Image 1: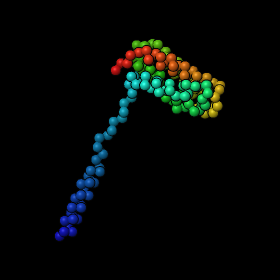
Image 2: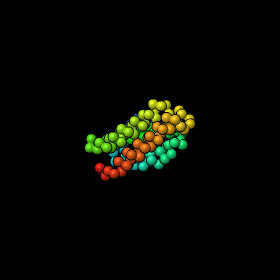
Image 3: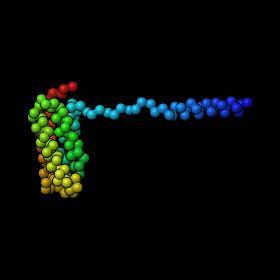
Image 4: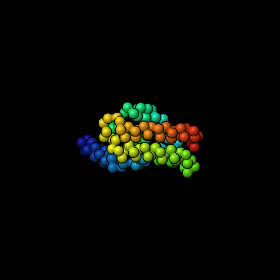
Amino acid sequence: MRRFGVAVGGALLVLVLSGCGSEAGPTPKRGGEPGPDALPTKLDALTADQCYASPRTQLPKGCEKYVTEVGNVPGAARKRADDRDPRLVAEADKLDTAVKAFRSAGCTIVPDPGGPCTQALADIAGALSDLKKQVDAQPTSG
């Protein structure tokens, strides 16, 4: 009789636990896109990068991740400008042009400094600096 009770108890435990395993629970929500007030923090991080600080001595292919991150800045700057700051939009356009020049020259595979890729990195650094000055001059909207 004791074996029967243990078997029934074990069967009930298996049923209860298997029912719990089929319920996944709520689906996690994706994190939202950072708001425009995150831009100053991103700019601080990007301007601490060696590809920004000394673009003329960097290996262009070593700056691929940096340029990818910088490539997200013009859109965030335009969103922050919200049609009220044409100077910020103009700086975003300059930065976008510099990033496109780096990409169109195939700089992600160029192993040595010099030439159009180094110039593109210098242009990115200059445009990023100008955009950062414009953003730093604005109060946050949050």
